[in-house]
Amino acid sequence: ALAGRFVTAPRLVDAPRANETELHALLHRELKLSADQEKRIHLIEARFAARRDALELEMRAANIRLAQAIDAEHGYGPQVTQAIDETHEVMGDLQKETLQHLFAMRGVLDREQAAMFDKRVVKALTADAR
Image 1 (cartoon, rainbow, N blue to C red):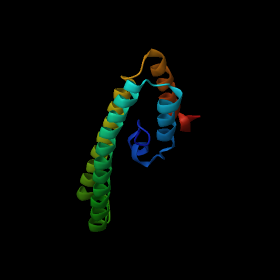
Image 2: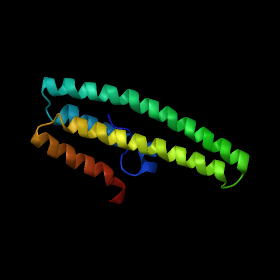
Image 3: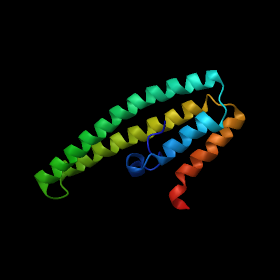
């Protein structure tokens, strides 16, 4: 499944998982996956879920370090700057790994399925722009 949204870093971790549910439903109900595709996608999803959970733990830890830096400096000082950079690095890692996960799932699909998947991903990424 998807980790929230996937293109802009702040949206990556803050977005609701509604689009994750939408893509999951598309994959498992609308695309008429073969048994082999289901099995392969399930493995991809399981690997990503574990990695996403680890990155989300890292994000929470980075947020704690940011809060501690803010508490220590009471302003935009070097500790806050470093903590922000750490937070952005984790968000970037999550964003990259989410996209790798999406492309891995897409790689299991046939041409028609991939076209439907692409449309749904684009819809998810542009939902707030509409």
